[in-house]
Image (cartoon, rainbow, N blue to C red; front, top):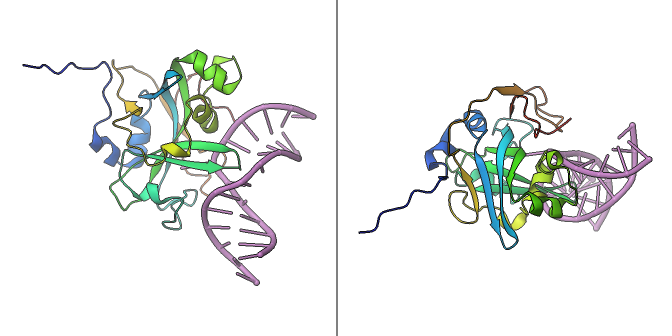
Length: 199
DNA sequence: GGAACGATTGAT
DNA sequence: TCAATCGTTCCT
């Protein structure tokens, strides 16, 4: 009687979030982040990610579970948002089954939709600089601590598969802004994409 | 209770 | 290269 209408974008299947964290960090490239707010909907394409593993000295989860990092050890496919440097929020995707503390930091997005809203929130007009850093995209997407632990496969904050398969090269290099584990090549980004963060 | 330290950013 | 700015963690 009722036919389910297929949406152009579908949330990532749950099992994706239990793939090895570095594998998912690659696979997230080209996926889309949606945030529906009262101001309107903003959409961005994920172009840069960093993996943080449990046996990784740079990871918040390295020394075990605390109140702050508890979400990292929780259900896969949920948001882990932390506050840092006294002024910035960063957005991560929790990976691995419950009990394993791993996550992927979303470092940069290519703005797709709602660009005027992003400009207003960031107080700048240069599109290439709206989301080319983890704290920048959190601000452009109005992501804060109230989104910590939210399910990314339903609700207003969503990660979806690309509508159409897109071909691009992937580069894998060391992560940015860390001292411990600095030699590990856990940063992934779309080659030659102008929206990737700068050193 | 207190000190040190950031998965950053923007200005100098 | 450096300051801003404050929650979390770790030490006493």
